Amino acid sequence: RQTIGGTMCPSFMATRDEENTTRGRANALRNVFSGVLPQEEFTGERLHEVLDLCLACKGCKIECPSSVDMAKLKYEFLGHYHKEHGYSLRDRLFGKVFKLNPIGNKLAPVLNLAMKLPGTRMLQGLIGIHPKRKLPAFATQTFSSWFKKHQREMSRGSGHTLDMTRGAGDGLATSPTRGRVILFNDTFMEANNPEVGIAATKVLEKLGFSVETAPRWCCGRTMMSKGMMDPVKENARNNVDLFYPYAQAGIPIIGTEPSCLLTLRDEYPDLLPGDSKASTVASQTFLLDEFLAKLANEGDLDLDLQPHDGKVIFHGHCHQKAAIGIDASVAVLKMVPGVEVETPDTGCCGMAGAFGFEKEHYDVSMAIGERVLFPAVRNNPGATIVTTGVS
Image (cartoon, rainbow, N blue to C red; front, side):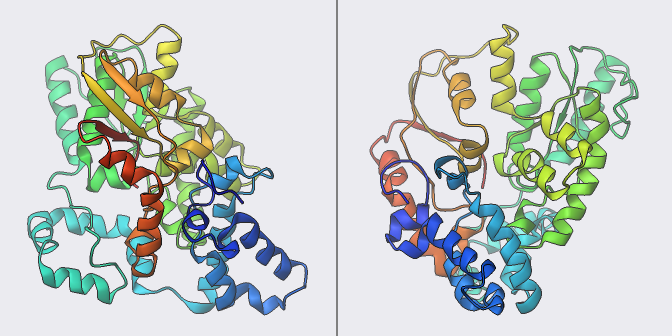
């Protein structure tokens, strides 16, 4: 329980209700497990209420003296709860957004326009999404479609043919290269913000790396947040088997969305206990900032960075802060000539993936953001605001 600084617990800092502390939630679970409360309470509405305002930000994993990862406890609880009570339409939409995105991308011009209409906001309210929230737009060109075109252009320029389905043990006939890297095109990069993946590709290629993608499944984070643990484990199994040959060969797996990339690193070894493949894959996953900072520390980062005069306000992603910290991100930002980087203790933004979109969580979400982050943005109107991760 803390009230000043840090992230833990965002909802407690907003409500100051003991029920919303990490210890309050942990004690409620412990009382069920120890028999103080009846066993049927484990899937009861009251325990659901106690855990409902947990944003799964993982602030407690690093800030709680006992390193309690309440996010993982909540995911497991929701898995049992929904097996008894079922899933709402909203849960299914948010949990399996990766299945809806291909439709959204194909109909992007129409759907993006429709999302701006007043009637759509009313429809949002009917399925439990707050009408004041603006849903992410769909990209008219997905990252993978851009990447395939880009690879064809690269192969024509070099006179070689690229086969993106080859395994890590196969040779890849590209011209430049100081090594191969796999770019993990997460759900949000793929469908909503392909420009992030395009920029990452160009930076890595500028450094001389041969960039590849792999036919991965969704990391499972969105399903995990709704307690859909069985399909999450299936996705984890598929992705570990897919990435293992690359990881075993020492080929880095690089991502830009902390929630997604760190699922491979933080969650998969727990979802697949005792699986050495999962541990190997986890050891070879890096956020782009982390990878660039590692190269810089080795004196091996040769980029012609253009000056950017002015202040940069950096807001760290909650999962990134909990799992690896923000030092690498800040170090890479500071390499840009002329940049003045500030890292205010902004805590959590309040969105936490789907949480901030949900009608009943909107007010708490806004109160969490208003605690530090929103004033930091308002008070620096000339600054560039930088964060890692769409979520």
